[in-house]
Length: 573
Image 1 (spheres, one colour):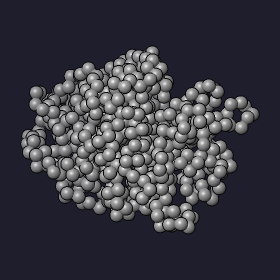
Image 2: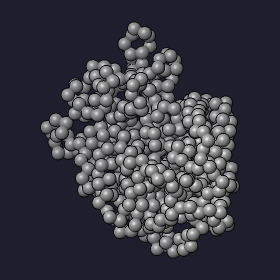
Image 3: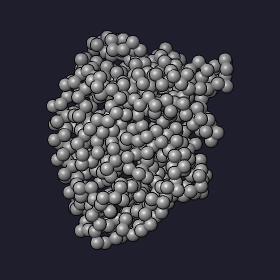
Image 4: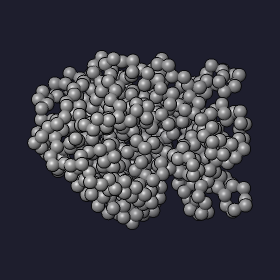
């Protein structure tokens, strides 16, 4: 039998019957992508007890799907200043320059660590180059003015995830809980109203055994990845429901810049292939975007109309350009043309993409690749320092779940994997330096922190979950997508308010399930995106609204901040 706690106006209502176990750790990490496993590895190296909570198998994550690579300055012809400049330009005036510089400058050390653990980045020799064959092959992607993308073929994320899983598994003090889904954070102020907010751990549903476990620790790291499943069309896997942001918001943490949802310009458009991303690295190797302007005509290039960098423009510009061309022509997709490369070269550089396209009847060396934009990356998230510290003591966030100030209004390609390696290192160093204080503030009496049930029963029907899941994703795509206006946003807000009430009642009445947890989270994140978009009266980066089509200079380097129970406010980053 499953149990649940009731959260009413920010306080935990403890009910009469406690029916769960309580587990204790030094550190809890929620998420097993690159950022989560990097956190577990770095914290585990200090010898303390670490729990990794992941709702599916350890390798089922967004990081594993990353194709392009890691942006890092390792070439003698490149500089930190140039990488910083490219990041700030893509971020459209919203990046925190201090955070950008810190992450960029700490990149080489993180790369060296990954190589020492066994990461095999592609070398020039592997691609058939005779000159300097032992050097890493550095790719180029949209928004980058230099080649600085380290990659492992076109499965970089899978290679990094492989190495990190092996490294974490090798640490006896790190325990991995697969098929466990976090429901909510344990926050001390909810047990003792008026006390300073402090995170003590999380309530976790053991999916296989249908039971709730309370996991407690002086520090909790949220590394739950993105929220692409909030949208109907996305490059993300099914697990990307924004759970970390949703839990942190319900706990009272600052959430920043959720209106900035990056749409990847090129996801394969094919009826039999779902959510397959065509890496930006193809455009780095000379692929160009084309659109068909009449039924029998050969598709033509169009990006020259939108940006000097043409098909290598930043992602927000490319995605909006594709959307505009599709609307103007009535076409269902545009095309990526990389036919200047031979089949042999394509198989060497993009083996996974080549095979996937071939399975769909598309030979990249001979055929145009049909593509459309899809929700890809959340540039906002839990507002944190460069060391991952949130506004709640003991609660840290890393990776796509966090908003460190690196991405601003639009993420520069391949900066995400860099952030997922660098920030966990900085966070672990910070946590270790202050662990004695963190542990001293950790309460000794944990009996009152267990998961309690009231009069909850088994759900009488599940249609509410599937129906609301589908409705949220569709109206988010239609009303809160690449192109926005106030009328659409207000319509979305009206719908999400009603749906939230239905979900809240369902959550109170019935035992929790994994599907209910995920629905609750995507509804919370959807409302945060809508509220952020309504509050920002300008167009900047990935947020474009027809009612305010120009950027507002007064909002440069200013975050949209949402805290539960408070009016939305702006804060200098």
